Amino acid sequence: MILRRWYSLFVFVAACSFSGDASQSAVNFCDEDTDCPSQQCDLEKQVCVASSSADSFQLVIETMRSAGVEGAGSSVFSEVLSLGELDTRDFQIANPVDVFGTVRGKDNNDQPIRVLGSLRFVRYGPIEGLESSVTTQIFTEAQKTESGQEFDFSVKLLPGSYSVFLTLDSNQSKELPPIRFSLEVAGALSEPIDFPYPAVNELCRLRGVLKSIAGNGINRLEVQAVDRQTEQPLSTIDVTANVAGINGKFEIRLPQGLSDYVLNVVPNSEALVYPAVVIDPDYLFPNDNCQDVHEIDVPAPQSAVQISYVVKKWTKPPRERLLCRRLPCACWARSIPTSLEFVRSFDVPS
Image 1 (cartoon, rainbow, N blue to C red):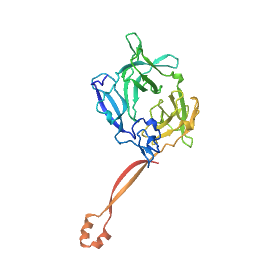
Image 2: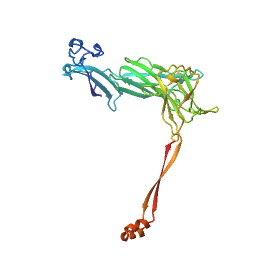
Image 3: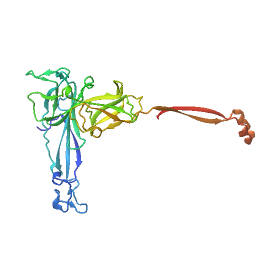
Image 4: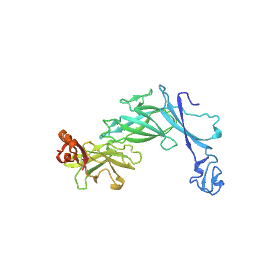
């Protein structure tokens, strides 16, 4: 259908190096005009160029829901257009689709549990860094369709491919890590979709001890696994502590087979002077089997030292100033220095 009035259009223009399909010249090298989709080669630089700098461009349209109107939160799509096509153009946007489903897992006794939190549906645009997302909360109690099928969430989305990020509520996030799903929305759903959360006993338990090079365990450090590229949280959070007489112990939970992640270590208390540390498990323990306890050397915590400084200002008593008027040379010999002290203190790492 033609673009509905409740959509607002935002247009972004991204310059292209040449017109036509970029896949025809992946490296953009050329020796003559016939090597280029634009039929024009810069012989000096040996690269394809557009016949005009404004011959073609990529039009990116973001649709956003108007206030008070039910529909998809936002989405993006694009086309490569040339200037000759801009006289009149109708853009076709599909109707939003009702997407609903369940998010269920199993506890340690293999009993089904409802997973609570929020779902963020992300649709990535054609340009790096351009994305649109819709976030919905999981119902605290399951709802039912007219046919009696249960569902835990409901959201309107435009057709397309989505990455779905599940963030658990504060109660469950201590035991259950966030997780990512993939979703392809092609059209209206006839039944609920299912996002199966891994059973608790199927989660990987990454355990370790953070210690200084001297061998002393370090407490009050917060540990979490995050995506190496996006820093998206991928695990539960734990704070190093004394467990069974051993300082610096931690245990986090994350999905089995997770890859391309690092461990972020930050101080849990402002009183602890400590830098942010990134640990690469691919380097330190690439063959982790979710059973070993890893001893990891990290910088030792720094202690705060108070430093004080004194600023002195030398003055002369009033009587001496009177003498100075009569005997300038004798004034300085007879003046009695006094001082005012200004004390400042601050903490610095040792």
